[in-house]
Image 1 (cartoon, rainbow, N blue to C red):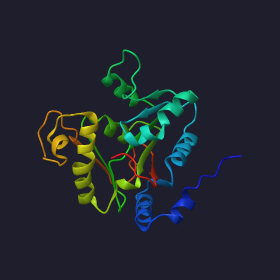
Image 2: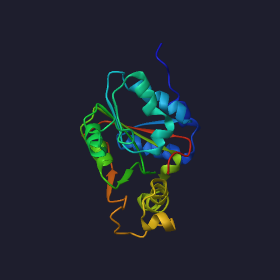
Image 3: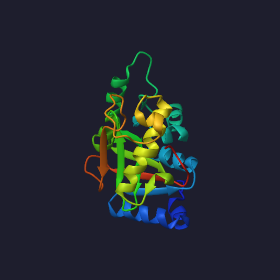
Image 4: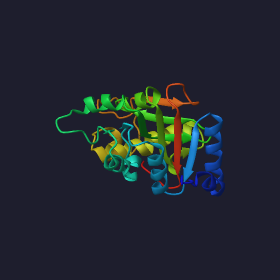
Length: 217
């Protein structure tokens, strides 16, 4: 018997902010699902991906914490993530291979309550994977990524997420030391390109998976 997931039941119990955001995402033609725990969300995503599909990952602490890479590998899917390259495979080659997979998984840097999805990258591979070429796209985030509007969202990305990521990765940018964005010109800057999804785009059908936990940065 096919499992019935609890996304819509969870939405009924969600906070006003979460309900507004999900309604806005759906009005913007994104499929949007909501789960109380990362375990529920991971089970949903695994159920939506067949065992014969290849899966590419963009860099994401949220996805790493959900254990999806390990679960997909154990099940037998071909999984491509530059955080876990095959022996002898360089980072850029893995990033290119991830562009050619059937399914792409990515975290989200920020979501606005009017249903816009914002991602900021240093390299751009994740933005490319989000935009085009896959049969299916899953964008995953905890409710801590929701902001009132675009300005608040960008402020959070630059002054919360980026400094924490530079500290995690030990990248010597000004924000690593101060914890605040300095609009720097560092060659190691991790916020070089910004992608804003205003509506469901034509390049790949997207499902937004929101989790009622603090996930990632």
